[in-house]
Image 1 (cartoon, one colour):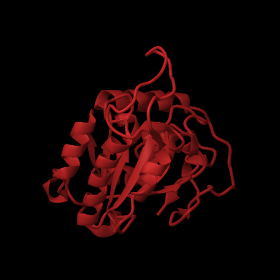
Image 2 (image 1 turned 45 degrees about the vertical axis):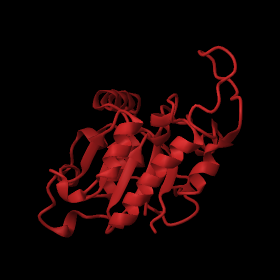
Image 3 (image 1 turned 180 degrees about the vertical axis):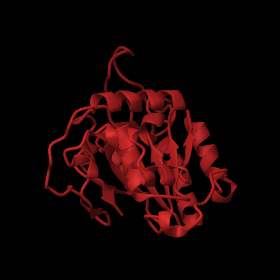
Image 4 (image 1 turned 60 degrees about the horizontal axis):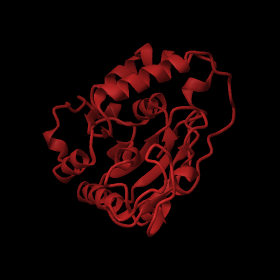
Length: 247
């Protein structure tokens, strides 16, 4: 059974660069937010990254598995914003054959996964196989934890229900599944920090202590996110800002 891979958090720019460099039809990207919110984050990301990077010969730090090492073309002294805004030929050709779906709530995500069929996509297949950079299709979910957080589904029960649906889809289609969380800065939201977050066991099974506007400890039984997702997926660190991983 295909095992989903939970990768390090990535900026919107890094996510799109990774997909354009390594994936093509019929890979599907599910963005767990509204289109307007994602594009706003992407534009802000591009503005923040509109400076020249310095060459870096180091290889990416990838662990636990199958992602191999490829140097990031964005880290070779060119303007970072140029990679997405200049629309090179391969990028335009690939992007036309990547399906992108926006899901604003957990309910929408589960509903979409439960009926997911690649044949129903309106995104056309490329005329030849030359555009396919990875031989196995992927379903990539961006913002999985963020979509659940601060909702009644922020619990072991809620996370497990959604993850099991994703696993079922990947198994049914023999696709690979990737989970990637968004980040808003170069050091924001490390993978380890996400996995150490505590959530209640059941939906509505605990409450936070203290004012609602403040982060507080949970009452009742809790479990770490890493233990929940570890039942369904494996974890892998990737330094997106240095180099893209390729599996």
